[in-house]
Structures are given as C-alpha cells and as structure tokens.
Length: 215
Image (cartoon, rainbow, N blue to C red; front, top):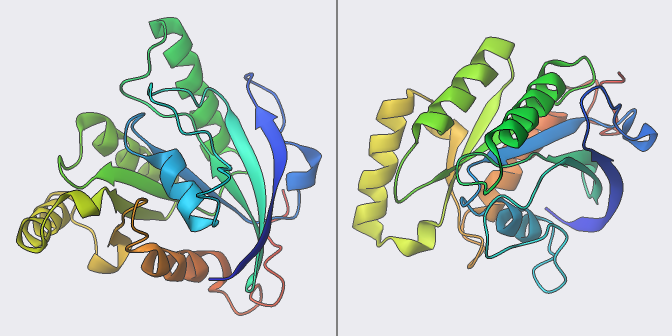
C-alpha cells in the first residue's frame, strides 16, 4: 500500500473528552496490545516512518498514555489510525491503569468508534490473559479484529509455523484474520495492509472515498 502522508490529529486523554473534530468523516481502525508488544514500531513500519518515527518507541513499556489519532492518506483513500494505550507492563499506578482501561472501553463502544481493531500479540509467547480478555471484549462489542503476530523475525521458519498453528487453534480464528509481522524487517506488512484495505474499504458503497462512518 502506498502511503502519501500522515498527519497527527490530536489525542484523547480524559474520560468524556471528544475525539478531535478533524476525525469526523474518517473511517477509523485502532491498534491495541500489551505495552511491550512492539505496537509503535509496527505502526511506524506500516506508514513508512522508520527513519523519522510517527509513534514514539520507548525502551520502557507503557509510554502511550492517551488515545492518539492520525490521518493516513493512501492510494486507496484516507483513514484514521488510532493508537490505543498499551496494557500489561505499563509502569504506572493501578488507578491510572484503570483509567486508561475505562478510556479505551468508552472509545471502543462509542458511536464514533473504530470500524475494526488490530490486536497485537507477541508470536513468541502467544496470547496472554490480557490479550484474550481484549479479544473477548472486541467480540462482545461486535468489532471485527485482525491479529498481528509481532516479532516474527525472532523465530525460525519451523518454530514460527508451529507457533502460528498453536495460536490459531487457541484463538479459534480464521487464518485470514491472523498475520505474522516484523517491524524490523517489514515482513508481513503487505499482508497486513491487504487485510486492512478489505476491512476499511471492502464495502462497494464506501470504496470510492475511504471517508465513511460519520459519527
């Protein structure tokens, strides 16, 4: 997928705060995962910002503490990429982590929420309890989910094949919903873009502009 440009639209950091007005009219897709799963690195790889990062990559997990919105203009149309706070290893007080969870839940269940969600899971370790809880929440909300299995370059071909098969069996998802990816090498980026394109612009009446789901 050819990406023309990416623009930061703003953030939501408080409960009850509305998304930036510039998000209106753009179909949204959200990225979520554990704090150490490589979410920021994958986002930067997808939008071609590995040299000048768009999403901040930190040595300390849990730095994304608000919901960040980006307009991404591609050859297929424009959409809003939404970077959600990570969960799991975030080094913050329990009360603060609970606030992030409420913030994310409110966004996901809102009328102006995303069309679908990319759930990131570390391929080496498989889904954690938090990952399973996140996927269960998406299912209850009726939100389509794509699963990006990160850090695929860390495993050899045979171990990778075994790990993917094990994860597919545990999650009980169609193989088309699961994509092994590597932010370091770019492996799987094209396949993930293809899945995102189908999610964002699959419907015939929306394919022309990429600007749909008006809140």
